[in-house]
Length: 94
Image (cartoon, rainbow, N blue to C red):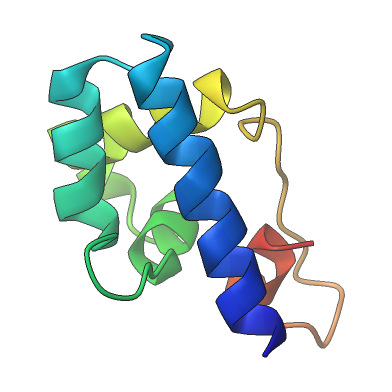
């Protein structure tokens, strides 16, 4: 239930930011392809890149668009810790 609420709230925030022009159409489309927002958003690949485990993908346009989208949504300052039992993707939602 909590996961559905988080996804719904995130999608609303994202749609609102696109409609208000805070996120460009190009970034919105690249973000949606990268994260898979159409069905169930997954931030696993993003988390792996952001935490330095897939550095060869840091230049990927989808990843770069995701960084810009999260900055526009004021979610870009997240850090991930390997000193917790909480999975990194769960840390994203905290």
